[in-house]
Image 1 (cartoon, rainbow, N blue to C red):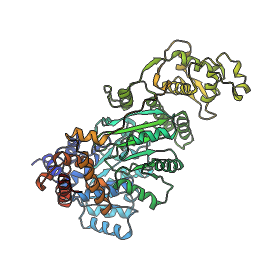
Image 2 (spheres, rainbow, N blue to C red; image 1 turned 180 degrees about the horizontal axis):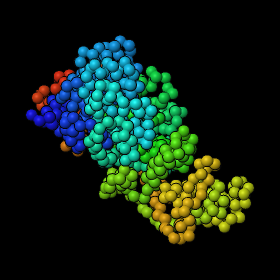
Image 3 (cartoon, one colour; image 1 turned 90 degrees about the vertical axis):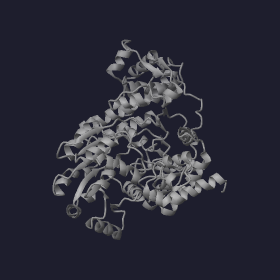
Image 4 (cartoon, rainbow, N blue to C red; image 1 turned 180 degrees about the vertical axis):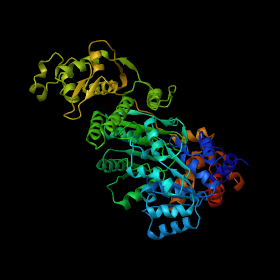
Length: 609
């Protein structure tokens, strides 16, 4: 039997999966052939399986470098649920637990051990692993190695010397969901001692609905979106700790089961909120970006950014936490000029080199352009990662439409206002000038006497704010972040002012839409895609799963993922043999949970409570 055939057999027997997801097979094959590997794969494409499966088929210990304790804990629990000997070595374990893991490593009882980079590079850890005969070093979230990565971590920089410290060129594989060309080059140079096989499997996540909207209704925009996803698990990202607390309280007051999460909370409370999110359905976590990288929850049905992300890579990484099971999921990003100015200040005030700041400004500009783009969101997003696609049919533009108009005259009025006021003033002052509002500030500077005073009365202040954002996204104006947020005209803007270039604007941002979207029903859509609409049985199985997760103190998906429950609803197995044909039901899961869920299906069929 070939190595890949053996891997496919283990895929079904251990994990309960009939076939590899796109891209997995060739990576697993390269690893089984002994090649070093760098793989860039979208979140939810099954990166972890690419090193977990070879670990079951070969001799020696697989060491997995993971950046967060929560991620280790969840992946170890999931592997143990599949009957795989796995453990984590980290500071969250008590001394006895870490001692037990060390003993298991010494006795050769483990297939995989998860270790944080700080612990891995310690001499005592390396000496133990050297004796344990490590066969594979797997680096998760490999973009953390690179100074160009959006989440650079200095402790990752020492990983390049680990292979030598372990007694030779240990086979090394690295995985990430977000690595542009510069980041990939940095990883290759810093981690690998020999040329690896490189796989870049695209950045498209077609199951995610992409949407962005200018901040207009405060908390109501957030509440309306979440109410359209009531009963579903989701994440709301905020830019500050205080806002997570306040927004979570607001959502609870409006009947949403919402919990805060940020680094300033007491560790026990933060851990408790995370466990509730993992074990129960329909929980919304309102968090800073401290939450997410360590969460391997496949059935997050939405991600909402209450504030604009730091850059386009962070945006891609954070929305990728929705729909990891491949089922429909929604995203919404709210943004405003205040967000843009804050992000630019953060870049300029950082300790990064001038070159790194330049790259970060480019990444922020790419995100601003995505927010204000007059075409399919997915086309704009993938173009940043050097990919092309047809209009996706699954973003706010494609689904709701966005009429484009010639905005050259409006842009010329705004540009003239900037020039005539000395390129010193920000959005609010300029919008007052354009609509003809003679405020104290306008009169203080004598701007009510300028020719541009009141020339933009065809639009309201909110619409002019949208025009400034779109001009900024188009690169015809620049924002001074070192002073008071004043606008200036770029070279491209001067061409527009002279009539040499035209400007296209989105009409929907000029007159904000009032039409409400229909209530989302991702689970119902997923059930329909699976050939069934028995939502009552699905909810009964979800309830039983949640009960088991709480009893065992594990994440709900460690019992079964939504995709498995949907397949149970579709097949309605009556025997253990039929249950073994359900997606995600391997031998260990069948022994542990098969009869429990068969009984739940029988009770539903008989009408029993």
